[in-house]
Length: 590
Image 1 (cartoon, rainbow, N blue to C red):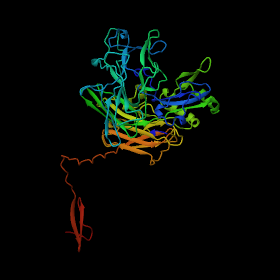
Image 2 (image 1 turned 135 degrees about the vertical axis):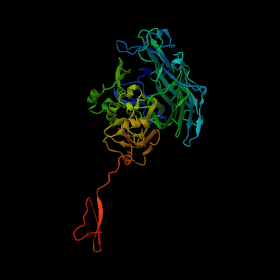
Image 3 (image 1 turned 45 degrees about the vertical axis):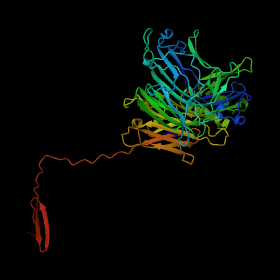
Image 4 (image 1 turned 90 degrees about the vertical axis):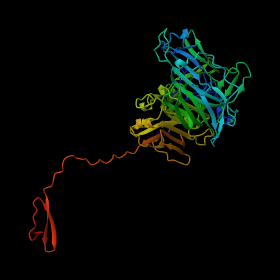
């Protein structure tokens, strides 16, 4: 269905076009967790198998957990001759080991604000029930240990110090694992690329990415040494590159050597408010995995304040496994044409000698949605067009430059038409597959188009999975896209199916529509998939030009040479007008 309408810096974290991963996988049946056998388990706790069998094949669309990782300050170097990306952890901006680099970049997490003047910190985190009652949070006694990649902050250069996601307790907002929540406000920045020379001072850091995630978590203490492992950045001197060392099969949202915090389901009918204060303005377009967001961004002394309130959403995920002998007859041909259409990694069937490598493509890493939808359309008839699980998610982030490559310049905060360089808008959806970037402006349709896709059904194979879509953008962005004036704007939103037909609203589809203020707020909820488009159309009434006022002339008005006379014939009177008027025959002048 269509709705019309490594590290994260400089390639350090390899981010997909969507936050969902699509991989083709082969697994033995005894290793997979079937939905039927785990019906009582929260979707957030269902674990993927970790081994591969060459006798099976399958497909996975899986959400990416944002809280993995550790803060780090690292040096960036030009790509090596073999194309490999080189970086190394640094202890400070003056670390001599990093002096030969061309730039520095950092990834860290914001702490709680210590006073009213602090910036680059979390001011407020609360839960709200459906009646609007607030449930305040408090910092929990159990917290992640400090990052192993310790570095020195530098406020004059806008370098934020090392940090970790913060664990809060919210009494009154209990979930299946207690009342703990992990709040991760991950920020990333870099010095200007290529400007630094050995022996010189690095330039100031410019903020580039921000990601806000809320995850309900439990607490599981380690029962034996080595059961869990805290991630850490290491530098290989021989290969001259950094790597994040962590168990690749871990399912912990927060993992330490001594404990694991698993992601749990959000309680029903709660929204969550996060208020943060930033030293520098964050530009660009936001993407969210939330529903009905309210976003207020204001200037404050020394920076910018974000106030975000939204409800979590459930994102469908798929992992279904099929014996190769049960695949369609055209699978070999389809695989030959499509298996190389996406980057991939390999897992191994360890039951064979030697171990057999199994290719695992990830089409969403190609950018856009066409490849992912192609895979979805092929696999859904095989897997039953249903979700395997639909874990709940609450996250908002700004889009990377790669995701904005095809977007209109009107979405760019640096557009000279705008008085202020600040966030231009946000788009959110619970679709498994979404467009990479903000809605595309279709000049022919005069509409904003957003493509989404996902399975038709919940994991029971019967209940329809209902979609959500929200679009909030500044009024001046709409004016830029449509060449509008300051006159009032009207908006409409519709859902278009894969055949180009508009889906008529039903009692299941509800809408949010407000285009009267500085921000245009739109939403559509309750539609169904497979690959619809969301179409938003903005219109503006043309104001009629005022009537022209009579032109005043200083020239004297010429006198007319015409005269009027009255002619009579008996009782009949007739007036005759002319330059030299005369009475008709039979009449005489009065």
